[in-house]
Length: 212
Length: 236
Length: 191
Image (cartoon, rainbow over all chains, first blue to last red; front, top):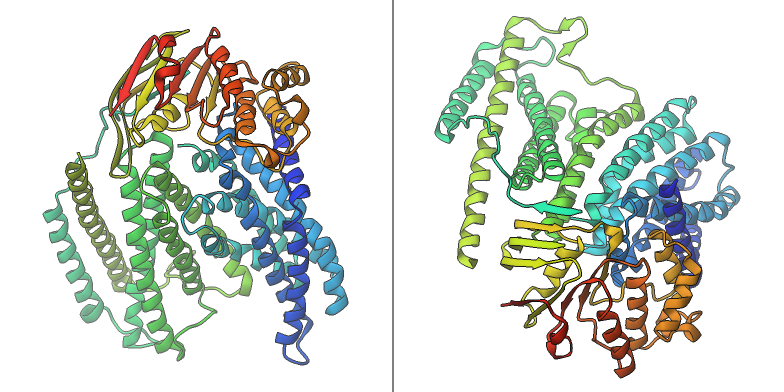
């Protein structure tokens, strides 16, 4: 129970920081709407609904990347990560709390993005929403983890997309399948498998990312 | 209580095969494999002489997987047992994996051109998987060299190598799901598809590739260790 | 409480610490001196548990919850208030009677009136005092302090003098040892 309390404490801190700074979430919202507008102009005339569905997933992925790049910036710029690592809590709680906070921002952005998408292109069905929910978990778990590493390197923002995109491919396949396939079950299953395996891996190995 | 002992006491090591012996066996096996592939094995009924590249393509692919798996194993030893030699071993294994991975893409592309007339086919699972893995492991090097040498670089590399090994099966499932077609497998569930010589040639080619990869691994590892030791002596 | 034998630390090929011997009994005061770049910060990070040795042995008889580490940086979030920062650490360290303890420390270090201000508005001296509050919050038995006097004015320095006389184990790194010489039971000069 101590673990969950720590996660709660840390997540509250992250949400509070964003509330004060008010930069990440508005940026994500604007970005996703702008991306939709760009899509309209890049999709050839008479494109199928399927093409638009695929592009929805591109939008989600890159909007998430925007948020993920900012996740560990306060810890790195102000060196407060050392302070958190010194505390007696489990280091994986730091990752979990940060992922949950990022998940909150991503979901908040999607709550706006999906109606806008429905407005611009076509409606979004139940299996798409289920796909998005499962995909968000994977994106935030893995993306936050990689973000912690990226922010400690010299290349910083350059590195996160390079690290994240190959790992995001199964998520995209699962997501697009859930949106477009006639039997979305298998694709949702793929997403669930991805989430389970990678969340476990992230949870077990975060210790080594922040401590020697 | 924090107690840290950096000496890695008495490692139980497997008896090491000497490098010259390895190099010699590589040479013998690869020559044997080439001989079998080009002179002994009968032509494939459908694709003719050009199908022979398949022996290289599959054996190189399996070898690449073995390198990535080896890299992940060493990564685990670094993180878990703090084996001081494991970081470099993991890095070299991943490096070999990438080299062989690129060869998979090249041989696969040639095979695709010969068999289907296109240099790239999205319908070829193995090819697409190796493209994804290539992107992933290329990022490994970007990550590693974006961090100053030290415990952090080693830890990041190790963790990322573990991610890679989990990604392989998940990506494969994803790619399969993305189209639902099946890559022609050498061994089907009812036993090998093809007859005696073909199976034997494949096995020789596979063993040859694995030994060759291990030889290259040992050569590179030795070189890197010498470099590190020299630098250490210079700065001491 | 701290025992270091043949302790060494390397970052890749760069050797930062070599063959360090240190023994600090419980209640002792270790004074670590040396020029810039001599490895004082690295040694203190090792003692605090933020790094592992590359060579040799290090034994610290204290859990993470019993160690307080004052780094060069204050390790506080600039966009949060002093209260929020201390609340955060108070919860993570499971400090009993958290509110009272935070209030008491803020008073002691003269930050009570500024407690609801964001740290970004603090002067360097005030931030250093807040860092001291952070370090003392969980009543650590071992205090590892890296250049604690930096940025403190005379009033702040006096508060720190008092702290250093308390019944705890101290490891203090400074390149101006004059002020704390008399308290030291162990001295280590790094080259």
